[in-house]
Length: 485
Image 1 (cartoon, helix red, strand yellow):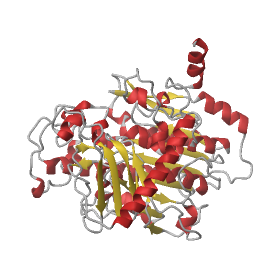
Image 2 (cartoon, one colour):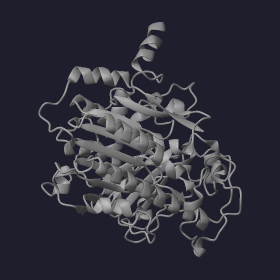
Image 3 (spheres, rainbow, N blue to C red):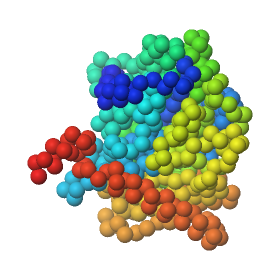
Image 4 (cartoon, rainbow, N blue to C red):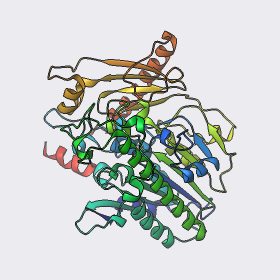
């Protein structure tokens, strides 16, 4: 079981004391960023789903902006959250490892100290900042605490109870923190919810059968031997019984409905204490959840719509003015950080790769990019999205996991130099996976290829600059290492 413990970002506290308060701002405003792991757009009501899974989220979207084509920067937890909190492509958090170091989650990922930071920007302007996270991977170890004056991280503890985890535990700690803040103080809070990923290991009986299983999905998926595998159910997520794909989907949908209800209760309590009206609420899915469309079952890690197309709704506080609308141009979750800073009246960090969309939402300007980009999946490569198409270019044989490579190709041969390029046309096919491409004109494909190459060259330049220290991580550790050489 896991135990949630308070960790203080000491550097953040020092920075807060140094920068003082923003005397020109109106007190009492809040920005609340809620990030849900495993939440895909097409399983929400506003995303066109045929089940009433998200009435609260749908209402929130009608009160502000709903981004119809929002794409995660990565289909996995650590790089996706890194992109959200930096406003940069997820690859900037991928360390440059020496050859003798074995790549794994601990050695591969760390948010660079020199990269932009959403929390640091709020802190610099005198806002109180706090993070409430629901999985040990989103931790100071990976550089996520920078800019947060208070950081609640999850740790392993046998005394943890179910109410300490998920939306209930995170909400409780957040509400307690908010209660202790002076009414006139501006604040930014980051809530990370891992409930949907936990569905497979800790199902809630009531919600597990809230929706009936679809008869057309009455098939038994094969069971894989690894934690992650293509074309089979990961053994770590197997329920140990003859459950159909339809039953797994129904469990997921019930978990989404439960999460949505608990968020509604959180918002109701915020209203009761007068902490809702002038709070800008941003709710996003960190990445999606596949049910076989892209070769993965109950997992995410491909660069397809199934794993990357996520909901993003932005409900403005009363001091932020724009007319509710559905925003139809493609956007990336790298745009969340600069957009939230703009909502607070601050100019985004110029090093951020994302774009502030407040003017585009309000109609006073148009977004300049019109594309979204993703990388950092199980397979090396990238994907570029426009309004109708996706170009995915990957090297399936270059995964860190031999089990993943073997499950993709079906043999143990060397496939590292084999490139797979798929062009997906949403107007011709509504499938969310990219296992098969579409015949399209060369112009559209060439445009996405050019945009993708340009984007990732920029991201790689930033990565080379910010990850120039040794892979050991923090400056203090690096300096100690260099001093010994």
